[in-house]
Length: 544
Image 1 (cartoon, rainbow, N blue to C red):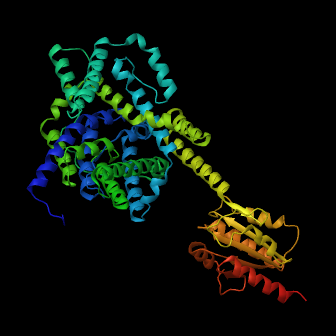
Image 2 (tube, one colour; image 1 turned 180 degrees about the vertical axis):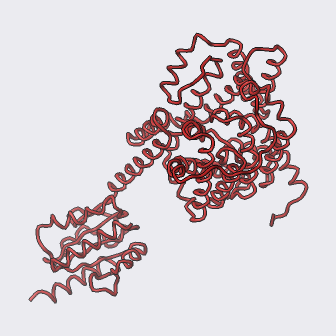
Image 3 (tube, helix red, strand yellow; image 1 turned 45 degrees about the horizontal axis):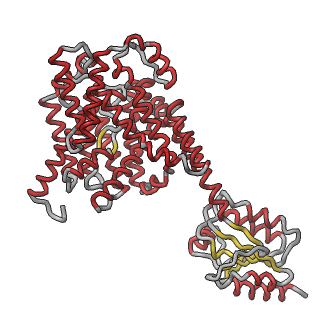
């Protein structure tokens, strides 16, 4: 608004908003049904959360609403705890996102490893596609198991009930979507396919299941806001699901914002975006909607349609609201097989097959995390998959980082002409009662014990130990504790410690535990030459 807003910008935003609304309309209904809810829940989510994400968000052109990433966790929560349980989980997820933004941890989400994100995203895609087989084939199944393998067993057991009219409608809708995507990508292929399928079913009076036959009592308009029924036991039980929803919302929203930045040349505000996502989920919950986040495909469509400001996203929500108020009766004619075709395409887009295959060419550790996260998502549980994937990826990172940290006692110096104090011959200059160690790389809890182990292996007690830290850019709490224990062990042995070339961050961390130049425990010198001169002085003073 500081840059000015005129009718020309409003016109561009309105056209973009209408375009995105046309794309979001069938998607919102399809995603809601795939999640185990009625299609009106998806539209309510797109209206309420879509408006709030754009109104409060940290990205100019972000579009929010229900997305495929939530389908698995929503379906499981509804199956186990009912729709009230989902509203409770969404409420907690919204509060978690607001807290994450307020405490400025939005930038940390970008450190989630790609094998984990790709693994659970591909797993979600497989589950979404699997969940639509019944509607696409028109199978006669009263109760479809939630688990992956039992679900396929039920499908194969019901193959004799395949409804060919339903299959033809689904194939026709799928073919239309693919053709429009290939030859007319600017046209709203999803909406056109839905309209064509509905018209064909209505004119030919085909006996296929539609939204109207499955959800005969679907309400029109927006419901009145209300809070879910809360209890301490329900909150505790749903807390893991709430964290999963918040995690997914944060990741997808910030990924979408990054994509938008690349397409527009702007820069989003991560923490503000998380706060907006949290408020949007609270708003969606109040109106009985689903969890929401930034939608990458809808955001890209918004930009390509000419969106300039957040008004485009708000207009998209208003256009959807108009549909709910004045045209929701038409939803009853939409065939379920056509919505299944849309979800097949959504699943294909989510799978990111090219990236999945590319990650399979990576080292064994990355490949194992990718496949494990994918397998756990499909066969076990999304929450477990994310937890295990992130944990193993962190361990793998720490193992690799520990391999880059070198601890040398002078016998195998690394030559480096750019550093004046890294001459291998300096080992010969050491006085008889002086020992030197050099650490290269960040010192964190994955490598913190190595210095103590090295000191124990010296086999003698030197009078002075020089610890060269010029190449240590970072100390964490465990690294600081290791240095403190090293100093204490040296003190008990009557050994003085000299730290040389300490950088700012390690120096500040050491000062927090009382190890500074003003203290008596250690001595600080600017470089190795000064440390060596101080060692000569100390040994001369100590020796008789």
